[in-house]
Image 1 (cartoon, chains in turn blue, green):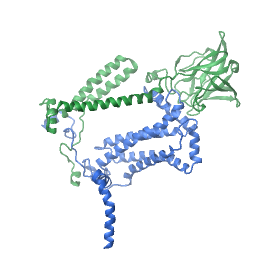
Image 2 (image 1 turned 90 degrees about the horizontal axis):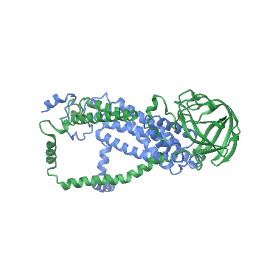
Image 3 (image 1 turned 90 degrees about the vertical axis):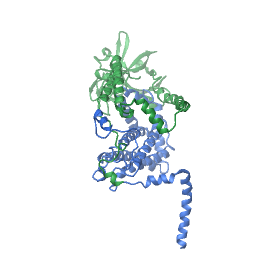
Image 4 (image 1 turned 30 degrees about the vertical axis):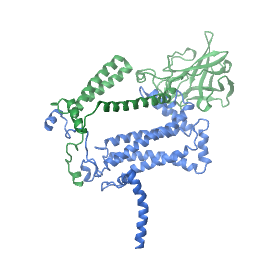
Length: 268
Length: 308
């Protein structure tokens, strides 16, 4: 008896503040909805690739923020500050290594995740929009790789960036403008490094966080796709988690009909 | 829930996905857009015609695609929309209501514009204005013996750190023509993707170094039989003409002048092809362009305007 009583008291001590939060924000319900939503019966390890990619991104965010405390984005001191991070500062080698190798891991996981989505047909209705958002996430991740590569400011990164920018320049019509924008002028100069640094740590990560939020919102709203070999995969209800059925803004046409005239007759 | 899921034909009208019907208008619209882009490069009237086609078929497309939204043809569409709106809201919309809504959105847009336009301008414009090349004094004429190639290293911008402003040119004195000294001055920037090309041949290891108004200069004797790029194998002869590999044009050159007995490099210019050699070389000078850009041939139409 005293045991249960104690347990009840602990539970009470946890639940009261949570209840206070819930009453004022609804956050507990939201988190519960997020964590305990229904997923198809036959999910497998391939469904974890998206979360793995997100984890890799979070690793990049955390290590990147900390590297920014020691890195100096200036042609005179960039290389030396990287040497200092790697050789002198305690654990600097580890955090820089995590960021450097994590960048490759992030890109590799992105492609594996994309391959899973493609092979499972998870890009199909109603998830086309999430595929499109994913494409932009992929492009921005590549841009992160490109802008981050310059930052060590050694011979490899300098000439790789020269070549990369000139590849941009070779695009028809807009190419030369994109190249000038990236360089901050018609030659690589003092502003190029800080420009890349700003893009790398402020502009692109901000955009990525926004897009990943949208991506996750749609995953939660539309549910996880059942693998194509399951019975569930045949249905075309948008949601597997019992979410709201579609209340469209317009009355859609009946499905699978190309002929506008004939269809209208049938509707009326 | 599971039952509904497995019903192959689940969903009422609202549940059915909205699939656009096939139509020719999007293709004609795209054709119009393509024509107007093409016209921008070739001749503006074509762009105007293309824009006309795009507007025309874009309108037809919009009419077609929004037919269901606008309601059945029996009823005049605008009235029906108004009816639905009133029914939905259960109250009439007052002009003040509409005005306030518009004013909020409009003011928001104006305030956003006032903030964003200077900020975006500051981000983009400095990369495109005041991009002139500083003249560079590379030292007295006597340092460039007739017929001898000199690898010349200099700083393109005096006040920038050497890391970002160090440039290299290959300079050869061609002797006097009509009483004027003639020079071949070739930039070492590969016109494929911008790596530094190297002279193929014997080169002095010890440079001759000295200072001019433009900063430190290093001169190396060299006897090249051509220039080669380490990155992707572009190869050029001693006039800068491409002999092998991916480069789309000949190596860039520098304008030069002789000021108080010193050789002064001016603005670089792009060259498609050089005929002849040395003092007799004949070529057309194009405005300097990024590596990888064609300045002649059909491909030049891909780059109608090159900022420089």
